[in-house]
Length: 533
Image (cartoon, rainbow, N blue to C red; front, side, top):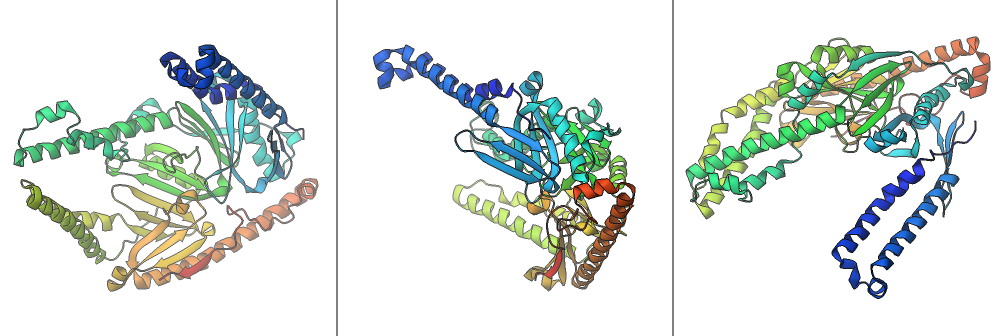
């Protein structure tokens, strides 16, 4: 295949992108006269600053032209080759079998001029393995189509347009509902401005003397402000991230588009899916809606610059529709969860009582030092502790299906995780001192997904210790059986393909499909099971 270059428009775009901050700084120096104190400016006047800026732009332009002329990339039947560098030359050969996703990102300006960033994500981490900045949007789509075909060993010369089927599209009403039911609690510190006296309007509403009425008003203002700020932040992030969301089935992969300011166009190969996660919160559950996340090995699709949220395969849909999509991707059926033993509610109640005691003690100490702190008002939350413990127990469970293990955890953010048996990497049995006192254990099902790397694994939490032993052994047996069946199925399909198109198999060198790197998502040994006590 011929080598390719970046888009010629990448040169002026990169110059403006890199040189904009420098020019803005120099303009500021000229406008304020701050640069007159520099020796070379003091001697020659502002013209020297303009000359300096011109030289800088010329050097930057020369560098970007050289970078464009020396940058080459090529898709071979086995690798993605990238040659780059001006001062120091660099050549990279990335095996195509390692590439999990090809994602396209375009901001508003890039969409206007017709260029895009192409990210090649691989197994083994959440970082981008390779990036093309910038190619035309048509070239980006070509790469997104061609790479999966090369991985399958298809003849590129016989390229045909793969039929597409739209599985989901987020309309304006659903986008508005998504924003209305989204909360972002990552900015709670901002609401403390209201309680610090920095906002005159709020301060004027409070009595001058600190006492019981002041404390009550302050607490109400703080809570209302926290909820309002969290809701506004969540609504803004949701609308910006998922404007114009579409999910399409195209051949052996899902393709999605989303974003208002930054437009993402990515793919999710079916054979690389590690975990399906259905998430909701109390508001979404009350309204009958949920979110679907799809993880591939080491990558959550869609840029995922913040580690969460961007990997949503379906950001907002009715619960029934989400469950239908899950069964279209992985035939799970209807899980019937087995909850932890009822004695775990004592454990949760004890946790909440400890937190209650710490908060009450801190307020009591503040009252002893400052006076007037209504520490005893924390008692109003005591009746809620057994209720919270009950709901924490109620929303936990595990289910072993014919081909999947499904776990459920969380109340404020409930997650239902679906893991095919053949995707399991490690089964971990852990038991803390407190769990052992109640004869409880936690069984964690680790996969190669990006969310599991961050610690959000599928887990059967606080189940009976004897049940944990049985679950661990059962998962181990089902894992071995599922992988054996999958290897047998790959051999059968490879044999059928070889009998139909022997020339193609002879060309791609795959043999019977049982290479060192299997299609479970990463180049790893079969998952081991260990009891981590």
